[in-house]
Image (cartoon, rainbow, N blue to C red; front, side):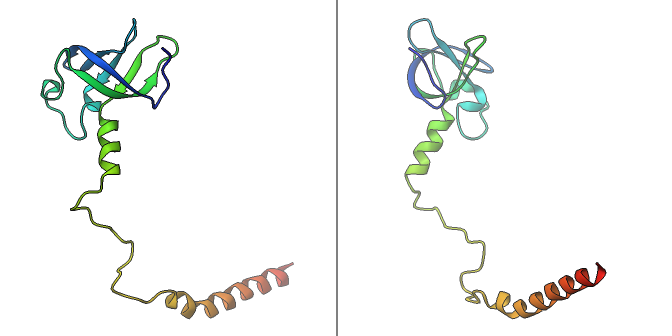
Length: 129
């Protein structure tokens, strides 16, 4: 089977080291879930999230074309799953204060001054020539 970056695949955890977990992807292909890709947030012990022989769904992060090593992620699936399901506590953040309805008034108030300043600069450039 050929793999592509971003592809969702399933596999079985075959071994766990302090830095990550090895996942069999079928055939003779194997990938690594780095400890930083196990879970969103700090992971103190990878054993809290993965066990040997556990079936996992992962996303292919990278494929080294020279060595054939495949980098995998569980964290990407967590992020994708939480982004599609809105949280009841999620709030919208605005760049401006939605209680103050000034609209484009500050721009309109300054427009005449900006035009006069630009016109003056153009006139100064033409007289300098």
